[in-house]
Image 1 (cartoon, helix red, strand yellow):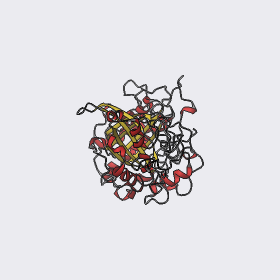
Image 2 (image 1 turned 180 degrees about the horizontal axis):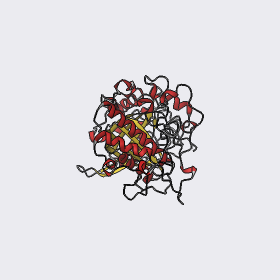
Image 3 (image 1 turned 90 degrees about the vertical axis):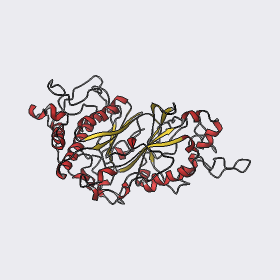
Image 4 (image 1 turned 120 degrees about the vertical axis):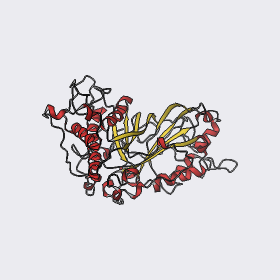
Length: 454
């Protein structure tokens, strides 16, 4: 499908969007930058010396020229998703096949002004690098100086970005007293309560910042996470990460509905990212926010959901279908014949029992039964070897959901599921995160969080 108008840059943002991003302060790199501006010491590149040196290294990345060279494998426009625009790409954008997701914790110290400067420099460097990578170019900087590490790690050099999108979010922990941002924390960014069935691993939860990189090429997606970690050395450390494959949720009307690792189609009734009315109603933050910098953004909830695949695979087909509420192979609701038939939740069988069981997953999440609540789901399957204690596969769904207000949307839905969903016998939430994803970048020189940090 074609990307919806919400994801493509057009006329300037409508009234009200201007306060989501400050006027650009950092110019795009000049092609005639001097060799001295392209260099920094090995010590600075390796991130030693605290916030001041980290800021200097990042500044060098911002000022460096772009070593973009033509390649026979250079990206064509069909392989490129526009990076700039009113909204961040990677939310409404049709999901590519691969995911690399990571969260980072900030480690800078020094005075408040130094910490703020380091955070700003990091986000400027990441934004500059992201604009290049999504266009199919290396990270800006010198690639040929034999006396310095190359500005780009090189594994994606000359390759197509393969519809690469990069989406950044801010976790609740960013708004503590380290950066003077406590008064700018949105009310909707409240910490998630305990939501069974969960047994969360702290090592796979939380984070000051998150990065979601999606591409049809797993190398292009990993390339983002690797280079962001390199650019942030001395300012951030990676907290946890997750690779995903085989997009497990459809989010576009023209996309074939994929299957999750339980073998069922997933996302049949998901919001279409190109449906502007639905996106405005359920996903994009508008004038209702208490923090103007979040307008045209969205809130991301991630959950690492482990599936008990071996137990599921031993269950009868009829039981599997009753747990989900759909036929396994056609994807049709148990009351229908085709995937997109509307479920009839009032239908009864010959014994007077609901055809779609009362604890079926689709009954509990259906917006008709949940007070109209909807979220934009964007999930990927994962497998990470085996669980040492049991010998079972460590595999499942890396669930990502975008919405206007996590508490009234995701939390409300998960409480319904946690209390009654038949699927809970086969799944467990073992990782979690909540992030405020700000508006898109308006053009070269803008950066993620410019409306927040200034």
